[in-house]
Image (cartoon, rainbow, N blue to C red; front, side, top):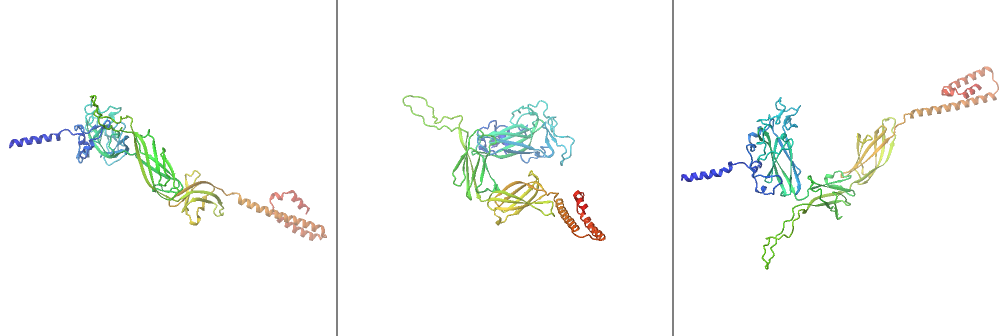
Length: 554
């Protein structure tokens, strides 16, 4: 019985040996239990199977929750951000980028060392040492740095040596990418990029995991882990933008009747896989106008009726792809001659340059309504302003529009370059005004202005702009009016004086002589009258020789 127990213990010990053996990549890199299908994909170019052994001496493995994570980085924690240009059309390349985010006030310098930023304060105690990790000088925790003979530990977790690219000694982070049961190792700085070709990747969502290690003396320690989902598809990834003049909100997929809508197809192809392929766009706008096929990614269409319409787009192209598999056929019998036949006959001969069709689809429902189609300023009139408001100038604008009646009119008055706004105002539009209305606006003095005028309702907004020249007041106008009044009074006084002189002369010729005393009195009265009349004459008229002669006759 005792022997049986010993034999059973031996079996249990033997069964436990694989558990204590070297870890494999899939044990380290995947947080979940590895699935069989993940290792059933074709080999990715430059990637290795995650069944390979992992060197745990140089690259220790810490599980989630391990207390050593708290001290894996000085001054805080490092965060790894993983992004990709997914989705990717099968056969194209997809690129992954990892960026490390260091604790506050830390950055990577030109030599690959981690230093404290100048003039940056954080919650930690200020250190006189400017370095967080000075790998170039070999002063990082644990010592060693990049000095001396390091060929035996400048290797990846699977034992492959680091590639000696120019400046590789300044690269102090090791990134291990893991997907589809395979891994890729890369030496880099705080940011790296990796691309894979998706020709052998199964269509659908896939998981990419990345582990990041930093240099630690003669070994490396983990500092961050990150994962993200990427998508490989056999349909062309695309998106359609729709825009229309006068449409108030293009995002609500409501557009205006009788105005062209611009449809712009944006194909997501960051690796330029389709650059050499002819692409065709087949449109069905849903308004019984038939199919429209074009090789231009931009198309215009005008709906003539109100209503709701279903938009359908099919994009087609031919791209390099896997050639069709040969179909087996039974061997042909040759009873007369005994020959060795191939067991299979190929009905099709594979062509190295096989082309396959790829399609992309877009569906949308859009609503067509009536709206304001056009606006024009057909007349501008300057309105005189009373003298009590000398600083303001009024202008009336007659505005005509086409389409539905607007509900509001707005103006923005700015400088002649239309850059600096000076005044904005909005007024409601009455139903009785229709599409012919008068807008009055005040301008701050004479000069040239830019005016933007908009009409809008619930679904449409139209805009027009014009330069407005506001005339200025003539500063000499009051003086001219005063001079005109003085000239009129002067002419009247001259007329009165001439009449008085003629009457006086006539009276002197036809009346009998009076006594000298009476004549002297009348002469004085006339002199007083004439002296008063002189007061109203301008000085140049008083010096007129003709006027002196006339006065001398008296």
